[in-house]
Amino acid sequence: MKKVLFFFCFLGISQFTTAQVFTPVELSYEYQLVSADEYEIRVIVDLDKKWCAYSMNLPEDGPIPTSLGISNSTNLKIIGTPKEKKGKGGKKVTGLDEMFDMDLTKYYGRAIFSVRCKVIDTTQPVKLELDFEYMTCDGERCLSPKFVTTEKELKQHLKK
Image (cartoon, rainbow, N blue to C red; front, side):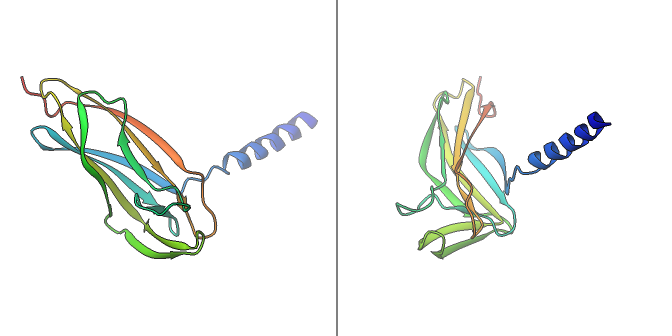
């Protein structure tokens, strides 16, 4: 009987501790060929209600700014600077952030961060390693900055 009781207690505790993982952010990625040798790469950030993601352009001594880049990618180089915008149903807010006591730009609901990249040799495939870092808060608490890397081979541009 003690073993059965112990098992149910252990099961309840393990369910409670795994339920503690909190993820108010969902990321998705899109890659689109916009010319014969250029891709637009997008990270779509969907946020739970009250949670925000911060802009790429923030003052020092505040939250970690969102960043988007490529590393260890072959046959690809970034052109221009990464861009950000609110997504469909999203909201961009610029103003006093009480948690950091400074004016900041942040996104609620949905945000899209994008970068354009040029293919160096259109006869070769592209190995893309996309790096994305962001920080999210809900007005009462902030989660630690998160760094995510995703890899994809891009072949739409190939010419023979």
